[in-house]
Image (tube, rainbow over all chains, first blue to last red; front, side, top):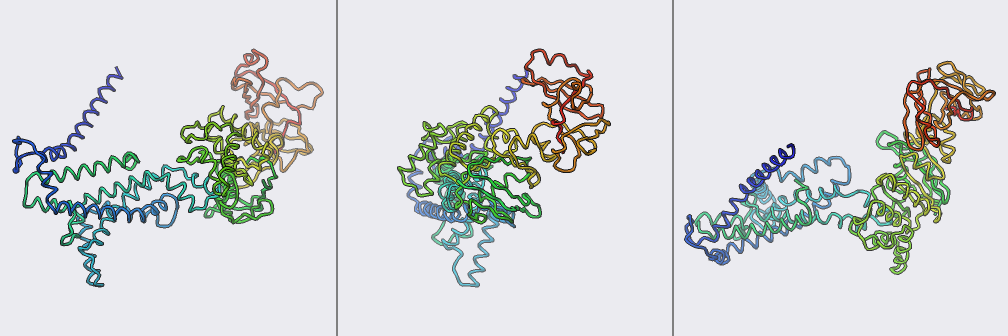
Length: 271
Length: 352
């Protein structure tokens, strides 16, 4: 009897899980579906299906340019975040020092502040610096990359710290006792052991940077617009399924990156 | 291999002293066990010898070399950790070869030494496996091979057996001892398990609250504990409280006069310790010098090879008596509440 009750309860949980999954996935599925509609004005049911919008998206130069810029910014911002984030994570996970909590909070804070707020703040800061020093920052690629580094960094710190927590400290001690200097220990032992966390962190950082809209809104310059912003701009004057096609391609890319990082590192360990 | 000596070594963590003025000499090829309750400073001592913790004061020497401030990677120690600490991304052979690579030993020579070390722990067929494909006992043997292949000045074992189950523990312990004596390795073995320490060591260092309570062979420490702490930590002990009357006599709280051998005295006598297996049942034989006490049986616990009788003395103290179960049916005769007289010779009374 008891086991029947337990089975029933589990079935109910499974149903709830699938229902939640469906709610999350439904808009995404709708976008993908719409991207194949034949009609220029979206209506149900569609009069037919076509791949025309994908070809069209490819022809719209601003999408391609936006895509390339987003790619560039994402890769550079992720690389900078790795250089800063991996040593930071090592220090946070491995040593006790004054202000450790404060540093941790600081590194994670970009996750907490709404993107639109920090985007505006960064923009104003850039303007102030420009006025004071005449260094051009606002609307430059450098400024954009800098802002995206802020988006990417917390993810690197978080995932690398999480993977370090699961690593036995005595591994490094064993290596030093066998004659490895701290440098050799880092490259031969610590780095290979936390590599899955680093790869996952990099993937995640890239995904978050690639999809960012709010922070970038204030920081783009003439002829230098990221893909998400190009999509918003396009939507202002057009409502044909081209945008759905672009969104589908973008979703697939992000999905692939996430699936890849999950293979290296169980993302559920971080959340 | 080297002689290890510690002279007045302190380790401070903030205001507290984890190790307090420790002096110790470990001879070439000797196996010394550091034993004590958690927080007694035994692991800290080991880490200071390894260079993983720095001594706050004092000197540590390997032979005549002062290594007190030498970094770990210049000390030439082999450490076996409680959690094995095998490099998970390297094969068994690469794990063992790591220390040789750091010493720039040539490839073919290294291969030979790795094979030799793995053969010593009977794992030569596992060279190409990854650590996670091995059982706990096998992993610990790989860790041992990795530590000895570099011919360390000292082999340091930090609770090497506590992650293993009871049966395996004895097996790996015997293996460690066999290797250690055949290679004549100076070895320090840290454990919280006094039975393990007694079973493996040439000498035992009993530590408590950062200080050494007693250093001696397992036999000395068990049979002649220096003080109450050692007596209670090593083995099972019965304590009889009372007052020393001098000249080898001791007055228990219940007013019985108990005898001990006065040359056993190491300090002020506050109690007599009697090991459970030294107590005989029945009245003392006529004319003997034996001590005699009476009480009622409180519990009888069958333990396989022996039976534990808990006797409630007239003084209100409880003592444990261990009797062998060699005679079948022997245990059945004892009943709770039954009166029992017991005796033991003065030589079995340990004044502490």
